[in-house]
View (cartoon, rainbow, N blue to C red):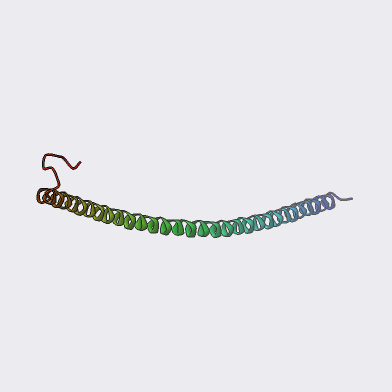
Length: 124
């Protein structure tokens, strides 16, 4: 064979090896890209699940905050009611004391008027 035929065969073999190498790299790149697509899809799915969970937690937090405000308002109303009842109790105690004093005075006057009661004897 001639020398130039050998060079042509070598060139064809080199080109064939290069083409095969490029095809293998392209296939590997395509499979790598597909794996990345699947991974990205899984990541997006997880992000959606986490977003839903975050929304649920936010809703629960808002509900608890509303419950706390309601409880604070109830506590304030109860405090005001307790203060009102305390004032009313003090007024009633004062009235009772005044009535007790009037009763004692009336009994003392009755004792002074009654001829059967010794004025030197104490009622208590």
